[in-house]
Image 1 (tube, helix red, strand yellow):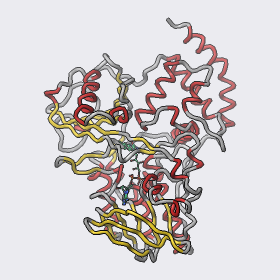
Image 2 (cartoon, rainbow, N blue to C red; image 1 turned 45 degrees about the vertical axis):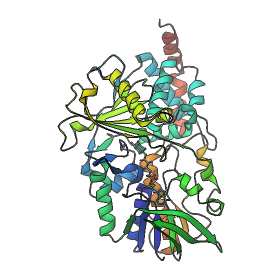
Image 3 (cartoon, rainbow, N blue to C red; image 1 turned 60 degrees about the vertical axis):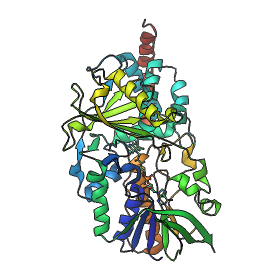
Image 4 (cartoon, rainbow, N blue to C red; image 1 turned 45 degrees about the horizontal axis):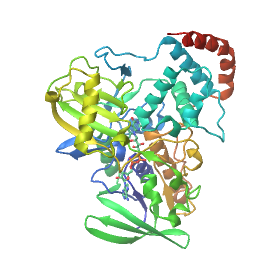
Length: 467
Ligand SMILES: Cc1cc2nc3c(=O)[nH]c(=O)nc-3n(C[C@H](O)[C@H](O)[C@H](O)COP(=O)(O)OP(=O)(O)OC[C@H]3O[C@@H](n4cnc5c(N)ncnc54)[C@H](O)[C@@H]3O)c2cc1C
């Protein structure tokens, strides 16, 4: 096995494989699943192509959007204009904001306050930050907390405040419309990416699972791989990029995790499932926008997009929902979970009936959890280079600037892993470029926080006198 073997064909592994191949190095890309893309992809379920879940591409995803552009498929994404919010009993009236003006002003003051924090080598939970602010109202706190769990499956005590600060700063520094694919992730994103990899000479092997890895003489020496029914031990003559989730790396044992920088950090990282529920309706549900809708306060933190309105070939509604609190349903059967979730949707969308539903696809993703950086997790997130000279790491959980997670983190780690390989095998080649995500320095925010403090106090007083 010479050249480079990339194990894990999610976005991180695909990006690494492409950039390593561009250095003129032979690459083979292995994935246990029957298709590439991992969480950012789709799979065949009951004869239909089903996305792993709704994916949005904010304007600050600079490396992801550059990748999409280089693949020539930027036109496969459409721009979104608004994030609609729906409260129980208000359908079909959608709001752009949920809390009253006073709470919203205090929330914006909270954003300035968060940007004024210096989290260099300390961190706290988003919960602790929000609940220690004298000016924030219960309504403003509840709104932020619900928004977070709806998008990342993490309750606020499990969310890094430094990370939240980083993503707010990134939004501020790279304003612009959020984008979403014009159709399913396979056809509009991952499929074209795979075609490009193969056209460039990357050997793609799906259905091939890494079971174990052995270290000898300070190098990764052997991979045990299952390919269909066959199990083989392969000597590693070249380099390996491990691009499987952090729990998969941890399973390879202390010889591998001890070589990471920092050692054994992956064992400390936590991920949580973020579920998907896709409802194919027999008709177009009137009154729904064609963009993201958050069901405010929904017990399972549901958000949805009626992609049937915008994807080609659909004449009826197709509600692609993300289930933030899918873990609450772990103990019930899948059919009971679907019933609970559909009833919850109906309580917000009263025109939706069981007769409308032609087909349901429920993916709780309990074995493929989503990584959202927790408090102090940055000290455990490993870098791409390891102490084994022929082993490199990629994955959304790898070290990244605060706030960088999800697809941007996966793509970024693919680039840094490719650069780690370049340094080892093609040191004369120019570095693999990683685009910087802008941030906001705390000093500027501090001045604004001080200047606005009397106003915040006055608004808080007004809000507290509300009946
Ligand atoms: C419902 C949902 C919605 C999301 N929405 C967004 C969003 O809107 N925006 C955003 O930025 N991010 C979103 N994400 C997160 C995003 O999809 C991931 O952060 C990103 O795709 C992770 O890429 P990855 O390559 O690091 O890991 P993965 O996608 O997990 O890829 C790992 C790959 O490794 C393979 N593998 C695992 N073990 C082995 C093994 N032993 N041998 C061989 N192969 C193996 C897997 O099959 C998989 O293909 C969402 C996630 C979910 C679940």
